[in-house]
Image (cartoon, rainbow, N blue to C red):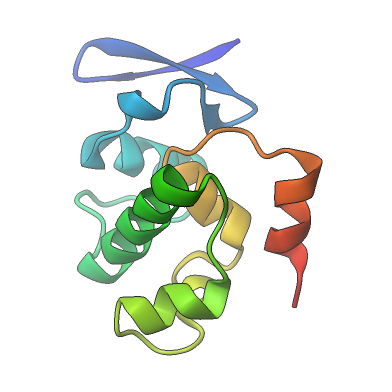
Length: 112
C-alpha cells in the first residue's frame, strides 16, 4: 500500500484514496492535490477548499457523492465550479480524502 507523509505522520493510500477518512486535514489535501497535479501551493484556494469541505460533509452525512451542480449551488460558486477547479470530480473526491469508490458510486461521478 502506498503512503504519504504529512507533518511526520505516515498516511496510507489505496490507489490515491485515503484509507482512513479521519487522516484528512487541509495539509493532507495539499499533498494529495500536488500528487494529483492540481496545485503546487498550499494552502489551496478558498474556492477549492469550499468544494472539498462540502463534498466531505455531504459524504459523511449521506455516504454518497453529491450531485455536482448541487455542490456549486450550495457553496455559491458558478455552476461548473467542480470541473473548473478540479477538471474531474474523481480528483476532487480523492483530494477531499474520501474512500475508494465502489462501482455504484463511480457511475455518479461520470454522469454528464
